[in-house]
Length: 101
Image (cartoon, rainbow, N blue to C red; front, side):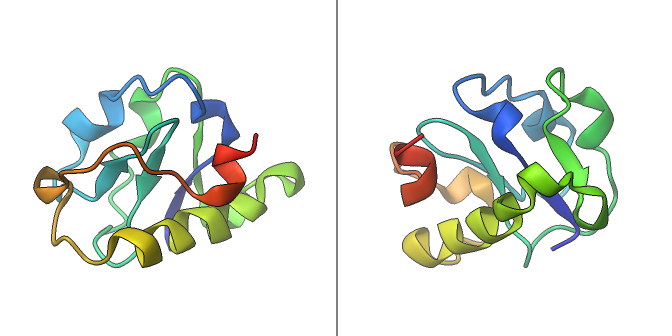
């Protein structure tokens, strides 16, 4: 996964990243946004527009945020491959770790 959305997004969901993403790979959960690793093209357009600085290149994740690589990946196991965030119907789901935060 090239880019990862971290804990700074929880309960903020500004959605500026969605507007900048040219490939529609940023999905909305109930409490935070998630990047689909299979759809992201590594362009980085989402990172500078995030007002909470929640988006990191995977190799630059701070140690305290490294679990969000797994969280972003596993989120898509539950919703499946929708072939683009605009096809997402249910936005009331989150990864179980995010639900419990």
